[in-house]
Each structure stands twice: as C-alpha cells, then as structure tokens.
Image 1: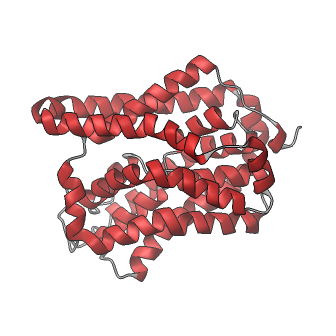
Image 2 (image 1 turned 45 degrees about the vertical axis):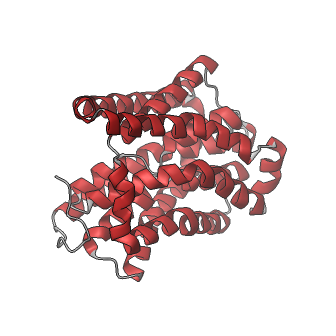
Length: 308
C-alpha cells in the first residue's frame, strides 16, 4: 500500500466542472435564504456574533494546527485537516441549530457573514497555517499554490452565486419564497451525490486509508464543536445563542474542501480522504448533538427569537 501522501484520487475533469456548478448552486440557495437584514441583525447580537466569527477564523484553525502536531499525522492529512478547518459553514448548521432549539436567526446571520468573509480569509488562513506546519509545509510548497489563485476560484463558486442570490431575494421576494426550499434541497442532495460519487470512484483508496484518518477526523470534528461551545461559554453567551455558535463553528463545508482539493491539489490522497470522511462524519455528529439538545430546550434568552 502506497503512503497516503503519494496517492492521487481520480476525478473526471468534466465531473469536476459540474461539481463547481453544483457548489455554486448550493451557495446560491444559501443566499436565497439570506436577507440584507441578516447582516444588519448582527449589530444587535454583537457579543455572540463576535465570539462565533473569532472561533471560526482564529481559534479553530489554531487548534487544528496543534491537533495535527499532537497526532503526528502525515503531511497530506494535516493539510486536509487545516483546509477543512478554514472552510466556511453551510446551511446544514442552520438546520441543526433549528433541531437543537437554538437561535436560528443568529445561525443564519453568521452563515451569511462567514461565507462572505471566507472569500478572502479562507485562502489566506489556509496558506498561513500550511506554511507554518513543520511537516506539511514542504509538501504545500511543492504544490506551489497561490492563495490569490484560490481566492479567485472561491469568488467564482461562492462570491458570485452568493451576491446573485441575495440580489434576487431582495428584488423578487415572492418568487424567492416559492423556489428557495426546492433549490436548497436539490443543491444539497446534488452535493451529497457528488461526494458519494467521489468516494465510490476511489473506493479502494477509501477502504485502504479511511482507518488512517478516521480517528483524526472524529477528534477534529468533536474539537470543532467543542471550540464553538467552549468559546461561547467562556464569554458567557446564553445557551440559546451558544447552540447556534456551536454548529456554526463545528459544521464545515467539506464539499467546498473537496472542490478545492481536486482543483488545486490534484486529489492529494490525505486531503481528499479527510474531506470525504469529514463530509459524512460531521453530519452524523451534528445530528447526534442536535437530538440531545432538542430534549432540553434552551431558555430563549438570546438577542433574537428563534425562527420557526
């Protein structure tokens, strides 16, 4: 069995182009459920919002960096963990927050702002921690990835669909109300289908290497959820808001990670396996936590009441 740093997962170039469109469609669906007011709303939730953003873009990548060193994972696995940690959340976090009886208004607002910020912060954050990593840095430098090139790709598949979706939601609200749910469902199912397809097309590699990354992914995911919860608790954010922050920090858009891995890293083994396994484990762990919290409703002491 080849070392995981030396394998390259296969993905049809035509399928990769279609995956980019699917991800753009997913971001468009998130934007349809976003309003300009969501960005204004954060002004009334400054503490919770500030804690959540800092936990996502500063604390989680730093903790991921330390975890990869403690576990002594292979360089490509470390790069995969760092990339996933730098990805923005998706609308799954909003669904889980609703199921957990947390502050959905805060969750939706944070998802909108986090995705907007990630256009610039994600590639820069990833490049910073990758260059700093003692074992992954040489591999990252051999790839010679420009963060500005990645930023351009992210603008194309996140930024433009996001802006278009917000514009349509603002300009044609009645039409948006009719189409946003089916758009969201179709785009999410399409993304899951592509993740399944990527795994199925490289099934032998996943069978060989999933055991290598499963512990790292499980610990990383638990740590991501704990980071959101712990930061919120440290700053005495109410439980109602704390649940939203937990999922906003703990749920990462691994689908975006896969797109970037196949687009810029040639399907690098450890990175692709980490993102593929994370995409499923993240949802399983999030659902388990949401169900647990659903049995113990939080007092609606947040700044904004939950959206039904």
